Amino acid sequence: MNAHDDIRIGTVVPAHERTAEVVRQLLPHGFESFQISFGRTVGDFDVLALAAAVRRVLEASACADGLPARISTVGVYGNPLISPETVCDWERLIDAAGDFGCDIVSGFAGRITGRPVPESYGRFGEVFGPLARRAEDRGVRLAFENCEMRGTWEAGDWNIAHAPAAWDAMFAAVDSPAIGLEWEPCHQLVSFVDPLPQLRRYARRIWHVHGKDATVLWDVVRTHGIRGGVPYVHHRTPGFGDTNWTDLISTLRLQGWRGSIDVEGFHDPVYRDALETTGQVAALDYLRRCRGGRFVPNPA
Image: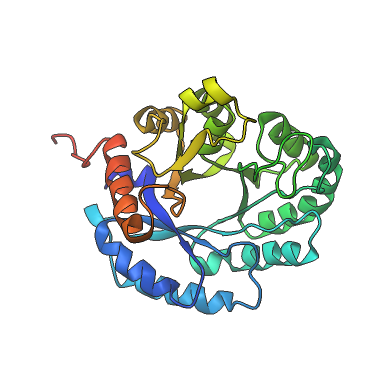
């Protein structure tokens, strides 16, 4: 048995015609799980064909330490509170999750655009009540990304699930064991939230963790504030930002958490373009060290 099977370290791969080939090329670097992201819409994508192609690659390969790699979650990031197409996307992915070998579908909770967050709670219940029942029937969990998408409490275009008060209201609006979060520390740091106390409070409702971090430029904040037109924070790949991922993973384990931390790439201002995969593999190595390094069994 490999005791690191409780927390996998993987990466997010976009859904496109070469997804299975990208997964095949990434496996030798040691990624243990993969989230498949469809972006803002599934569109006319052949979801079941993609699931079959990716699973063939995973079944033919193994990641480091003898762990068989797996799909952690599939996601779509439209606005389901105003887009019937996005609701259909959630339905399709809930139905197809088992074909990918996973039990989590992730995405934005949506938002009534331009309105304060609480005005979306009723619509959230209308949309996700039936989706949660569909998920429960299929043994699937729904994980809401905690990105504010440049929105505030007063107004925004995409997502209400970016603050604890909204999470509590969402859980009350849809009382279902299938409803949870896709959480990452980056979006909390952007809002000057200490992620670890939040993680301790909500760990049992977090189904998936994105491996993304942030660096706050405190000199800019002190000089210009956060509304002075000067960027005050960078989204970073884990290992290059402000989060202590050793404490974060320890906090998850103290809560008995099981799941995947998948690196959400294509955001780092330094490790991008030709350095994208370099940065992601560095994040993989870093997160595995934060997880405790190489698993060593106890003496018999």
